Length: 267
Ligand SMILES: Nc1ncnc2c1ncn2[C@@H]1O[C@H](COP(=O)(O)OP(=O)(O)OP(=O)(O)O)[C@@H](O)[C@H]1O
Ligand SMILES: [Mg+2]
Image 1 (cartoon, rainbow, N blue to C red):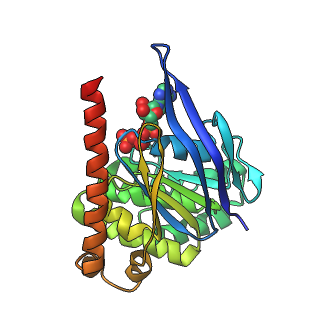
Image 2: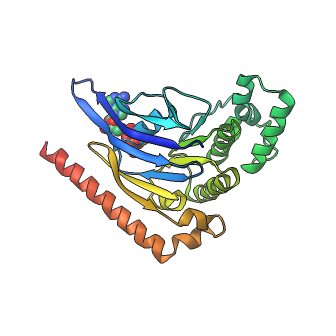
Image 3: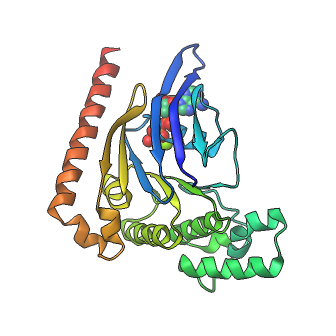
C-alpha cells in the first residue's frame, strides 16, 4: 500500500535578513491510499511548503515523509504535480504535453498514443491531441495538466491551487472532474485550495492549517466528496450541513487572519 506518512515534519527557512521562519511545525498525519485530502489555511501558513516537500523539491529541516514505506528524499515518478497554471509546454501540442513523461521514459509509441487518447477522453478533450496548447482556454489547459499528470500513473497526486485561475463555472465543472478521476482511478489526491467551498466539496478529509508556525489546526471528515460522485455539486453546496461547516471554517480562518493582523500591528 502506498500510504503517505508525515512524521513530525518541520521546516525552518533562513531569511535574507538573518532571521528564521518556522514554516512547518511538527506535522504528523497518515494519508491512506485512495484518500482525497484538501488543505486550507490563511496565506503563508505553509501549504505550498508542505506540498513541495512531499514532491521532493525541498528537504525538511526535521522529520520526514514516507510514501509506501520509503522516505521521500527527492522528486520521483510515484508523485505527480498539478500547479495553478503555466506549467505546460505551450509551444507543444496537447498530445505532446500529455505524453511527455512516457516519451522521456522511452515507452512504446503506439501504446503511448493509445493512452493519450484514453486520457484526453477522460478529461473531456477528445479530438484536441493535435491542437497547440497555447490555443486552449485556461480550463482546457488545466485538463491537459491533469491528463499529463495521470498518464504517468503516480501513486499520489499533489495539486497546488489547480483551479485557482479559472472562472466560477469552469471551476465547478473541474471540481466534478476531479471527483470523477478520484472515483475512477482510486488515486490518493492532496489538493491545496484557498476556496472553503472547494475544500469542503473535494475533501473527504480536510485539514485546516494555522500560521506562525505553520501547523495542522483542525481536521474534518466530510461526506460531500462522496455525495458529489452522484449528486449535483450545487445541491450539495445548498445543504444545511455544508453551509454550517462552511461558516464554521470561515470564522476559524477569519479569526486566524485577525490574530496575524494583530501581531503584525503590534510588531
Ligand atoms: N524559500 C523560502 N525562504 C524563506 N522563507 C520561505 C521560503 N518559502 C516559503 N517561505 C516562508 O514560509 C512561509 C510559508 O510559505 P508558503 O508558501 O508555504 O505558504 P502558503 O500557505 O502556500 O501561502 P499562500 O496561500 O499565499 O500560497 C511563509 O512565511 C513564507 O514567507
Ligand atoms: Mg501557496
